[in-house]
Length: 172
Image (cartoon, rainbow, N blue to C red; front, side):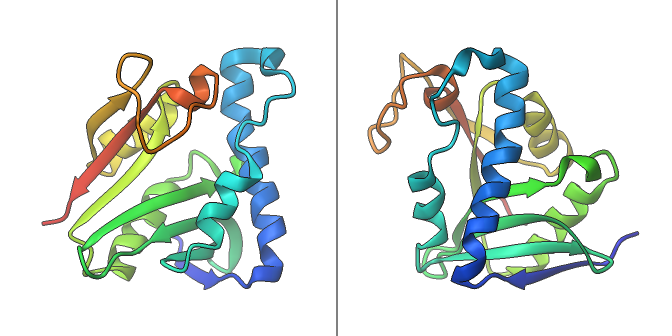
């Protein structure tokens, strides 16, 4: 079993993190929708930067046995005990090894005062849905779509921007 560790990133490392997020998140969109997404940004820099520069967020590189395997941004609210998994990725060549679950379990231990974890994932990301529900114990608590828009998020103009689930995990 791999030893999972985290390294807090400095602002000068954000460009590499942003590039990783954009590249990895685009894989599922292109697999699902093909190249028909055209020039539309799959995840705009502003969306990523919103998390990277939020003072409540921590941006972390993730290592397994000393080898970098991914990254994560978490938003910790110590007042409410509600934390958000803002961004989370594992490099595609590391998939299928159980690292995602071990990383998630390590995050739970890193933030033991979190009472509820929340995250957003697109409706078409079956791999993510399986992972969060069946492996990590999250429940789907809301589905935003054309008939039920999120008033706090502007429309992205496409299904992969506007149709997504809110997941929640209440900690024991």
